[in-house]
Image 1 (spheres, rainbow, N blue to C red):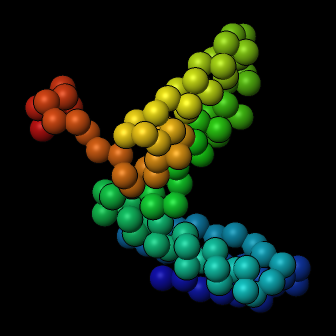
Image 2 (cartoon, rainbow, N blue to C red):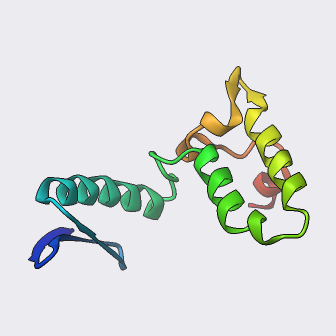
Length: 115
């Protein structure tokens, strides 16, 4: 459930879905509403085990580069490898452009047979 509150510096949007709460501040009410609708849908799909419908593998790779790889001694080569992984084509699409919700475990994999 999303709620909006007027604050001194703008608007605060809060989203609560299946026990998980998130909030964020915005300059305009329209921006707060847009974020709340998008984030609520995203949290619902994650809670249902479907994965994110708005984030891509590229978003994950980029965030990993920013937050993890930059702290490592071998950051140059790790970033290079992550870029190559993102460029690899799967079903004639770059891997980095695939949405997280579209990722599936291949049949016959160790994870699928362990279930």
